[in-house]
Image (cartoon, rainbow, N blue to C red; front, side, top):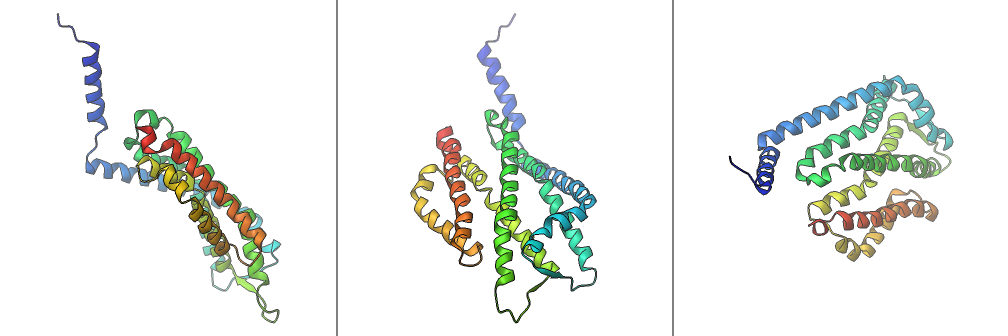
Length: 257
């Protein structure tokens, strides 16, 4: 009768887990392909859902900032409104499917995480989605009113400011999506800290430079010379930077090792 020690069993299990976790380059490509397919399926389903509520999205949500800024919109292209509706449905579908997109993104890179860290993927997906959606809400209620108000009032009264519908929606989508990406700064800090590129000491060292950059960025993104608008944009960016330092401190590679 042969007796096997518990240490030998554990070592054998580790070898099995390591062999199972290792993937070839082609297997990584196959995994990436399926993650992209699942993400696209989510966007298609969310786009169909958005199309069901397309009138509400266009008239009650996206055109509301224009009415509040007293902007006159014009359609200058044949079938222009049809293409606008399709664009709205697709972008709304992309925004609605953000949790699904982040889930498959983090599942794809999860093999690079430790087993003790993989259980936090759901929380990471939730936090990433909240950051992105918070940026969109912030752009809708804070950035867009100032942007459209400035665009409507700038210039001489002799020239009437009537906007084409496609240019208007281009501003709406670019500002909202850009804000959503900017609010992903804490998650970017998490990812760069995990792979050892970023650490809290570097972020603290360049804090002053970052604040100056944030103020310049706020002045560029905020139309006009209204200091209140610039401060409203700079405050959340500074807070996001401080949150990113905290995130980097927790998940930096050195602190984990």
